[in-house]
Length: 79
Image (cartoon, rainbow, N blue to C red; front, side):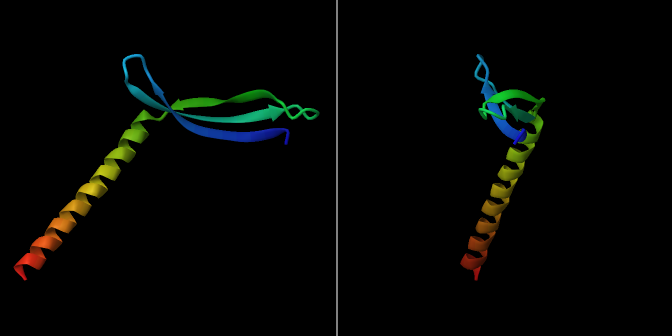
């Protein structure tokens, strides 16, 4: 392949300990003879907000599950 798509999400921990999330999407160009990578052209994007939103959704799902279990236990104990 002359150009191969590349996509990765990564996190970076700053010197202050704060974690930031990023995403990179790029195309890699390889040397036809050796297969060695020659060039990568792409873009890096801050996805911190999206990651925070996803974590909030996961926490809400867990919370709703705990509520459903508690309701089920109280229904069973009353019945």
